Length: 462
Figure (tube, rainbow, N blue to C red):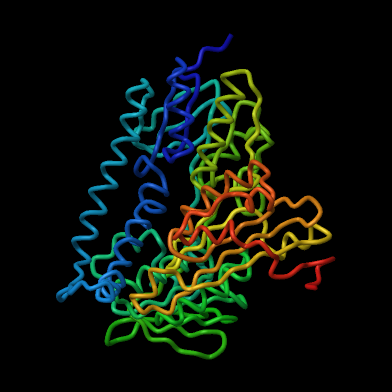
């Protein structure tokens, strides 16, 4: 029997990799884990967590304005970007420490180094040049922002990585992209006082979301003062001698801004990992190909999280890690469940969604009932804001099962998490109807929409 240095070696210290390593170590396995940047991965270090902190920061200017309608006199306010960055960095350092301590407390060995595969059982730590062997290897290196290197002047632009570490807050910014990262940062920068423009090649932002959510958010963003350019792309970015940048678009516009941010998707981070040496197969985007149990074509090598390009969400990576533990170390083969994943866009207002959009549901079910409510939330009445909330339930008419739930408005993400439980439990519209409303709340609309707003039959609205 071959003797290995480790029972398990994990390459990548993000949420998925750390969970797999920590739990395996807690089961008595000898575990090594390597991370080339900082433990916590994209989500904790330069993704979901700092982004949400920035979202909170960007909302305060509206809170101050709203306070006057409720009788508060708020004095002059001033935003300090440097203080936000310092506070954010302190919190991220605290969280990274928790990730490290979780590994250390369970006796996993930590390597602050890039790790590359030498063969199916051997890993080289590039910082020291040392090689170690492992019975099993998990690759959890995540994803990386697409630099759009074909764009002339791309090196003058930033991605979401750099957005968290800007020395000064720009006066103006152009953000390329129409996905949730682009949309969230457009709202963040606008909320912090930056003149913000979003440019997207599609006909509407957030292409994979329900059309009512997309249109409702677009309208709200424009009313706030965010400029949105659709069906156009940046063709070149250049420096201006006097300072700043110009972006020339395909449709002939020339936009002068201080900063250009590219939010054009994320790619699996597999370059230079030594996958070829170990015989691990990837697809055309560089994502590691895995089976239903996260195993690669090499029997002892597994891959988790964004590096597999299945569902790029932190909770999914953690779920895949726990399924790996069940399968490999608890003799309980378990495949990840990707059905009905609650999702939020932390825009302003937020989008919270779970299940099928109306368009996707119409392709799957012969007849749908669609329940839709649009209203002014109570908080907006005294503040004088014109904002609207939209709530929508998509129901299979034959079974009465709720197959999609979508919300645009304050705390939509929190509501979507709870709706996820309902849909996962196969709740029907009748279950919603017989649930007592909590009044006064925005969420009560979810259980008081008794009559369908319209029906969809064979893909057509009737």
